[in-house]
Figure 1: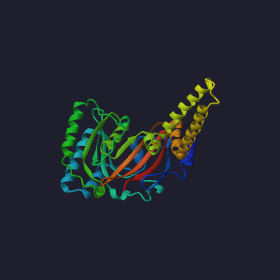
Figure 2: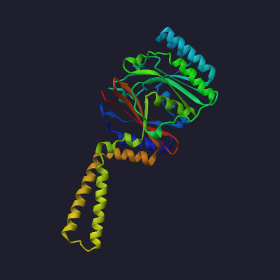
Figure 3: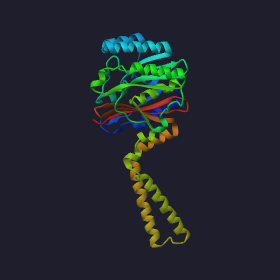
Length: 337
């Protein structure tokens, strides 16, 4: 492991030791390094494959799973879909999506297990069209949360005519598929969504976002200092700055021995004590924010959301890139059941 990456991992492990993400479940934080020399450049697709959240299938393996789990008419539609994609895609990749393998500390007590997704998972397929555009299609989750706007991959302003025609052909088949997923007893699933992007790096992220399984937010929305303490820290800081200016003004006017000067000093002391108390209460969150802000770049949080009858079960991955181009991930989980 590169020295800088190892140092950040060690610092994060020490910082998060005995700390818990408090929603329901009080899950610990687990630090996961991503070393580009071993695993390649980071992407949602590679990360989920590495953690078995995406199970790869050959077309033959996928259709075999389909025949074993779906009705004959649905299997026939899938056969036609795969034939269409094989004829028009290069780099066709077929996955079954499911809950990733969690560290033991997070798996214990989490309401969802990998087993509910069965051997097939939820179909997610991607490929490169002859026009050079990446197309993804997958089954959506009915309930969803929206990513922060700056992390949403925009729709292409225009696509090649042959790509548009291919998407219409794909949708004419997927609209006839009523997929029965093993996880459907726990999750509420709908039909297929189709997305188009310019790169493989983007296509799986956009597909999981569009199908409702992935939400991306700013790192500070996840490290919730402001949620827990409102605007108190800023209010204290503003009040302290105003009082300090008032003291300077009184000093310049030679009012050091006046009752007003003493009152301002006392109030300033009280405000500083109040700020220190809050900063002590949320020291972990502030220190974690500062680490992401000063030692990592391109920070964000991936939330893998699974909705059980309106209640959320979520795996959170707060991550940032080191200056050595590795990535460091802080994982935890929550649920609202």
